[in-house]
Image 1: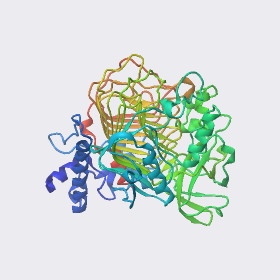
Image 2 (image 1 turned 30 degrees about the vertical axis):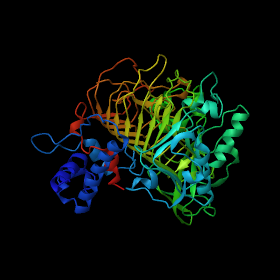
Image 3 (image 1 turned 120 degrees about the horizontal axis):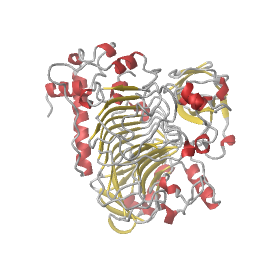
Image 4 (image 1 turned 180 degrees about the vertical axis):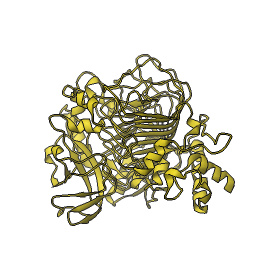
Length: 593
């Protein structure tokens, strides 16, 4: 049981975000004003973090959280003071306080009524028979009823097929990750096909797509099947590979990054609660890509035309829900991630009907133990994938012996909480790609592999690529892996309050362009083995911030900046993560909402 004093110390160590209006200048002085409700909430947070380790049955690395150094309060770094004054337009730090499901403010996930039990549909908890058909029947029945919870009781359920959640508001819930296991015997190559890469060669697209638990709208499953039968690659973005079929709702007047209200030409087809796509096309001079990189001489001098993989990700598509319509004024649930300029043909459009409100909770997905495949030849023993998903979540889920762990593919506003990747080692324990935005991964863990890595394999860790933006990784423990910015110009992403044994390597094809766009932030990163590799990024990422990074030095993979000249990046509290205030950038930003 935490005492009030213990909670106060925790908030001082981790805090600075619930301190009233003058946050930037009074973080330390206002700790004494925290309410009883805040203390109880903080105690709950600590208990939840402890429960996360207990639930997965793993042994956590020691996570140094830092305390107040002897001699009194630690001063708030200048970068935080600057940011708190201009949170939506700061040049180095993105505003990510609304990342995650329901704009990130949700302490608990909804408890949908139970509408099915997989054992009533023929699933057996002793692992003796294939339970995938029964589980999928129960999920389909829940979807036909408009949603609800599908229970998977304690036990081991063998699955010889993938589990598909294609209807909104369907929750697949086990009895806890330590009690319910789905044991997968086949991979996606066996179940669906080899599914070659749209980039040519013998690369397997199961190296970065799909899951044995796959949350994806039914319409997208149908398009995937048709594309595979035709031996073509189905573009993974929000509008698929038939972008011209999606209807323009209205065009958008010029606006600035950070605005939440925009002016449209015609609001007749817009309603409060609608989920729409903001689409920004690039122009011949690639000024949109330059803007994503912070602008200025460096991005202007960069040669974009041969970056064919990168340009295939354009137009930039950002899904967002409308919260109000007043005449031609439309208010969005999140601030604009970029400027809106006429030369980028800005418009709000329709899109593939997304999966919303669906989830996986309280189970372990374990694949049959097989050797890890050589790099980019993954067979598809993949874990949980969210594709074209919005406002979805995973909670208390472990994946074991997988090629790729948790995937966010054209997914947004989704929260992964208390997730863990363990077993024989993974190519991408977490992958985030193809225009995934505003997602939150918190209280996550990547466990040390249980078997040595085979020759010719790579471990990327937590991945982000393909113009993905405003995603957050928070409160993590990585016993292996790295921070994999996999080219494709990801921008405005945050990794904060993470302990990492940095022994992986990042990836990325040269045709995918820069490793980083602007406003990439690493904040309070404790590197246990002193290896630099994409931890301290002030020499690589334009208009970005490295704050509270352990002292690190180069090793093996040595990168050079993609842009010439002054990167306008910031470095603070280098070598002293224990001194960083606030400790967690995401939690601090939530106090600015």
